[in-house]
Picture 1 (cartoon, rainbow, N blue to C red):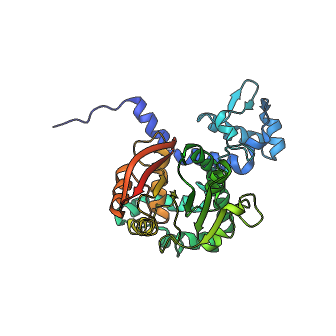
Picture 2 (cartoon, rainbow, N blue to C red):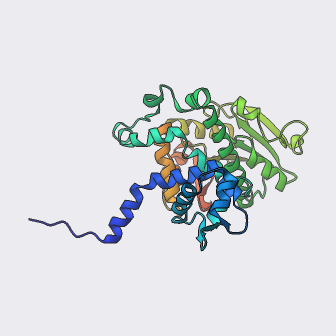
Picture 3 (cartoon, rainbow, N blue to C red):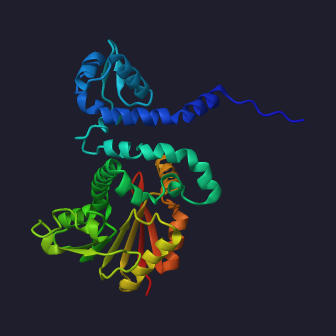
Amino acid sequence: MTTAPATTPQAAMRLRELVFGAACAAAVRAAARLGVADALGDTPTPVTDLAAELGTEPRQLRRLMRALTCYGIFEELDGDRFTHTDMSRLLREDAPNSLRYISLWCTEPWTWEAWPKLDEAVRSGRNVFPELFGKEFFDYLHSDAGESARVFDKAMTTSSRQSAADFAAYLDLTGIDSVVDIGGGQGHVLASLLEKHPALHGTLLDLPKVVAGADARLREGGAFADRARLVPGDCREAIPVVADLYIIKNILEWDDASTRRTLANVVAAARPGARVVVVENLVDDSPSMRFTTAMDLMLMLNVGGAKHSEASMVRLMTEAGLEVREVRAVNPYLHAFEAVVRG
């Protein structure tokens, strides 16, 4: 007869906290929707004054704020007053690196219906979204969930702008005259690179409706229009661009077959020796693993995609005909795979 080893009170307490994780996410969403961080100024504020500013019931607002302080989001002081912390300031819409729309996007109404189906996705190997909503994720988003689609667009725009600056600072363009950003969205990365390197020429390749809304600096009449080219297309079908450098950032999250097609199209289009930089969130060997593995699970649920480990990304790139020479951190949650097209 064996007996189970005794658990520690700390382990039990931590597991209790984790299973109530939805309460924390809901509290962050509530604060973002109410505009608490925007209403709270730079000086400690009584909860009654804050409630009057927001049009909420003071007692209930205090309960929300008290819960958030447990996670370092706001700080409670004597006299029933609250003040900002580094994290709470990120919920302000005017913060330079605001996470307000990311916080809203990750807690949109559909997420609360999808997460309880995670065991089904693990069991079946299929995304659960069509069974829940009758259509694939992006079809649902743009036809049935207009407000959620707007939140998604704002979240992706703010996230892209922030990471574009980090990537532009990371990237060494010595010997590079031309670059193409594949699936580059509105072109924030490309615009950042053209701004930093006045002699550089660049191409943005993305779906027609995406390219149509490109960064104004890249479009006709924009600051970089004479050095920028906008090409509508699907990188999984073809990449009709020859360049010194190919950038593929945060789009290789589909099934492996789609990723293979995109990488093969790069190799087919590029000259031997052309440089290829793939930028991804990794689910291993990263200080942001809690965040990236959570995104990985969400991709499993909504589109059947996946985030990569370093090994899986290197394997797919190598199979496509790329020689991966180095993997480096761009920031705490992004890694760059530096490669060249084999001759």
